[in-house]
Image (cartoon, rainbow, N blue to C red; front, top):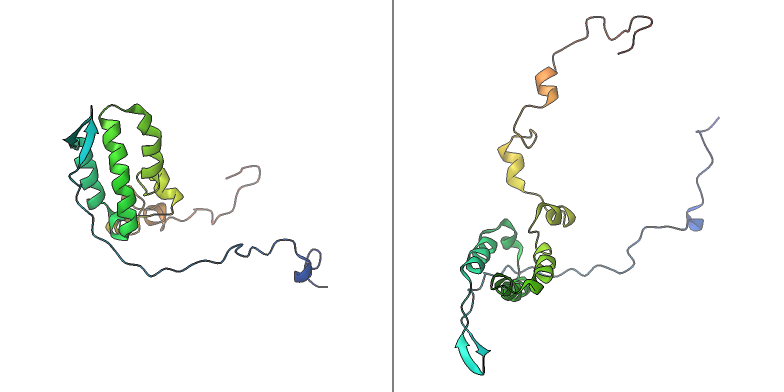
Amino acid sequence: MAGNGPAPKDPNRRQRRNKEAVPQTVLRWERAEAPELPDFRIEQDGDLVEFVWPERTREWWQSWIDSPQAEHFGSADWQYLLDTALIHARHWKGDKTAAAELRLRVSEFGSTPSSRARLRMVFAEADDADQGRGSSGVPSARERYGNLRSINGGRTEPGKST
């Protein structure tokens, strides 16, 4: 008697083959340095005036430069983030219509735990720092209770459950 269940379907008759619908394009990677927030002029009441970056946007920009994600940014990523900095500045200058676009743009770079999870980003140093323990650094249950043995050898008495 062979294995359990019906015989496998002929591979030529399968509906799903889980192949890529579009082939993947492999690009040569070139890391880029972060640009400085630029000085420029904007038109205000018919005059050109120097644009002043909000201090909060300057701090935000520096946080991206210092972020672990930054080592994976190419020049196009920095340009996109620079455009996002303008939206960030608009938001901090009181333009609340910029909030939704800002949220969408920064999530593309892994700005929150949920966006990092969606992008499948993890922090490598965390594993080294906690030496394979959980995120709390507390020893695992196996480490704490690994030497414990059942007194009755794992048997249960009649009428009792474990």
